[in-house]
Length: 482
Image (cartoon, rainbow, N blue to C red; front, top):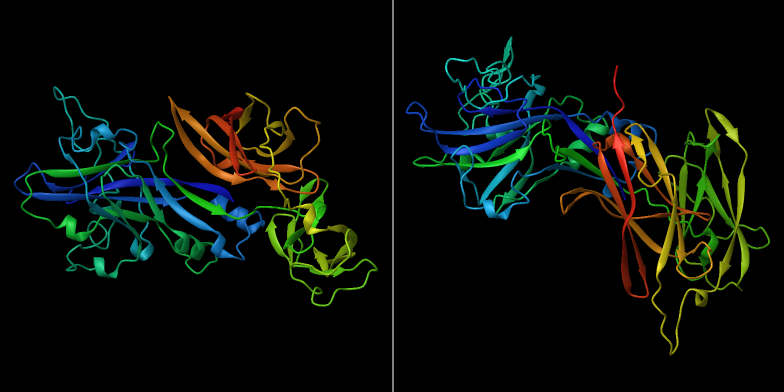
């Protein structure tokens, strides 16, 4: 599995019955309860945002992300709680003298009617003036509770009516997901899979963004003597915790060509490059499996492979039995066209080995192994521009033995940054691709925030799981724009 992160291109917090704009505040304060005013004894706020998914769309269009099997793709909205790493703040008050909210639900809803809105230039939630000095961080320019832009207003103030008495009512909203917060320090993790897939396939063409709010039952609570709040970092955060959409997709390559085993399901791949650049065919080709004399095997002709990632096609071969091993078979790839031109058929060989070669059955146990690693594609302590896409090769060797590439290893990598002693996940444990001649993974810097990054390696062997810490350390830096 690989990930692509898409970031917000605008966001704002709407405060009930207020023209205040806080579009450039690094934190969104979602609150409900009493307000310090007799005019409006209770109030609440709602957070709105939009996503820049251009990079995600380009990866889908060029086949880097194959959407043919949407069950393997997830899209999750992630926002970090400002107190996620400090449990001591539970059951305390915030800097705004509000109680920290607990035991509540937040909804993720689609902004109805694709209403365009501006982010605004405000920072402060209140007009804080000292000795009559103008507060330049306060703004009531749109967007706000009433206005989308200087010349337009929301169809319904605050986007929708939470008591179903307005032009646009809560009952008519598209609720994308709902999340329960037991303690109030949890991070946001909304499932947007169906929503984003509908945008990518063109069935949902007009979107102006989404909003996050307390359920109406909470917004409408009356008689409260306190206000209750939960806060999350916004796109203007000066920390690493900028909110994003995490798109996870299955592009794992596990090529069995060198270790094709009888009696087991095996996978074979076709790799296509144009002067080193991967490319896709105009169509999905066909595959025949041929026996050791070149005859097609009944039931294994006209197989339909799938596009695994850009320039890589995968065909799954069911378990073959009844053959004298080792023996050499072939996979024939045909019906291939590129830019309207027919390409010649491609026939590759693979050797079928007996199942006993991969099994150990007897009275002895296998000794745990310690591994060593070499890398290419990223240098230790290298500074990498955030426009690079790196293919990182991992040479896996058994420590204190010959420097031979190990062919059958379950190896994983993960990527993280460090905040003090805390390791902040960027990409969770992901299996490393295996081809006939290398182990590798692709690291795309274009959706990563500039920072210092670390990569760990994990190997599963003989029932043990060994983690090798900080195998690679590098920095992602911005290219200075003109």
